[in-house]
Structure formats: C-alpha cells, structure tokens
Image (cartoon, rainbow, N blue to C red; front, side):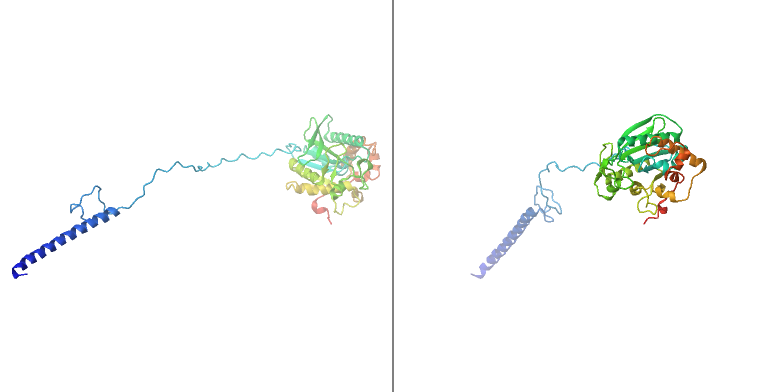
Length: 368
C-alpha cells in the first residue's frame, strides 16, 4: 500500500467504526424492547425515542393471574341464634293439695297414733284453721284383715269430724305418688283444709315379727333390707324401701308443711320400749323429710310408749277434749273401746299415754 492510499484506508476504517457503533445502538435498543416485553416494563424514555407501543406505559406493573369466576358457595350458612327455650314445666305431684294457710303434716304408723301421741297439737291446728294432712303408713290390721283396718279408718274420720266441729261426707280419691306409694286419700266434702291418707302396709306387731296373715312382712324388715318389697293389705302395688322414702320426700315437698309430726326414730334415747313400727316410721320420716330443706326446722318427734314413764303434761279441758276425741275413734275399734272419759283414762297404758304429750326437736332426741 502507498501513502496515497492511506487516507482512503483511514476513511474506510472510520466509516466501518461508525457503522459498528450504529449497529451496537440498534442491538441495544432491540434488546431493551425484548426485555421490556417479557416483564411488562418500558425503559425510561423509550416512548420519547420513538418506540411505538400498543399499551399505555407505566412506571411499574405488578403481574396478575387471571381466573374464571368462582362457583356459588355450598357452605352451610351460620345458623341463626336460637331463641330462648321455653321453661320446662314439671307437673305437680299427685299428692299436692293447695293450702292458703300453714300446713301441719303428720305421719304415723297406725290409725290412732295421731290421737294418742299427736294431740292436742293436731286439734289446735284445726281450730286455728290451718291445713292438716295426715298419713298412716300401716293399716294397723293386727293380723285381722282388711275389715278391721277399715273400721279403724272409719273411727279416725269420725274423730276428725269431732275436731273440726262438723259432720258430713268424706270424698275418697286413690292417689299414686310419682315415687310409687299408693294411698287412699279422704277429705271432707265441705272442707279441703283436711285430708287423711291410708297406705295400708302390713302391721308389724308389737313383737316386730308381723303376722301369719301377712307373711310376717313388716316395715322394720323392709327398712333393714331383709325383705326387698312390702305389699299393702288392700292389694295395692308393692313398694321397696327406696320408693317409700322417696314417696315421703315427695309428699313433704308437695305439701310444703310448716310443721311435721311423726314418731321418735331409732337410735333415740326415747325409742327403747316403743312399738317397732313407731320407731321405723320415725326413722323413715326423719331421713325422707330431712331432704326437704324448708320442712326440716318444723319436724317434731312424738314420744310413744315410753311417755308413760315421764311426768304428766295434760289436764283439765285440754285433757278432756283429747280423751273425747279418742273415745269417738275407739267406738269403731273392736280391740280398744272405752265408753266415757273415765273408762278411757283407766284403760291400761292408754290412760297414761293420753295424759301426756311430748314433741321433741332433733336436738332433743338424744341420738346414740
């Protein structure tokens, strides 16, 4: 190559350099377009440099994921708040009897125990126009059958007529308590304040051995668990100890007594020498009515046969009224009858019991 050729070579070399530079710029811009298309970002100034776009450029763009509309929800909608449940209505016990005044509940082993050991408290309550509800657990049959039991019951109703100062028919209703004990309940047709109930369980005998006619079944044996059930003498449903106890609790809860009278229970210093039926009933009542809180303070226990050894407490008109009530009853009792006041008071042992009335609180029982 000659010196004259050098400018041409230099000019060609310069032209080639310019061409390379132009190509580099073109390649750089193209690469930017490709990258921007891939990530959705336009380089700053691209529009100003004449790069066309079918989309409106933004400084930044967040990629989104397209999807088809969601199907309707099949989830169970939340339940509406429950409305207040109606109060549970518990039907009253069949033994319930309305009373607008105070109630005296008395529970005894035999018909006549109330008149001998519970008076004058019972007659005073009737005179004060209180409600009096009396229950006899045994029929006092003495092994003589249902006929003798009915005669004693008739005597009791006559005695209550005397205490209330009126005669008239008594309405009878057979009541089966929810707990299982069945009773026949009598009330004067014209006086709902009074009621007398008879359960007619077998008499246990003074020996505590019962009688042949009732298979020697007794309340005492039921309480001790030597027999499982006890059947009434009137062919009513047999009951076990739990049913007897629950029935007494039910009755006390239904009648809501202010006071309750019954016998001295087992374990008391006043129980030895008493009739076994007496102390058995006293024990049952103490345990059963003891479950009715409002009745507990008013429970009183009448001293039975052992009262004959205690000082006399009754005399004058009070004693006369008590003896007359008992005499009216005794006219229907073929075993114990007395014609007048003097003969009643002269009756062995009965005269001593009639002259006395001892009602003990829980604290007075002197339990073993």
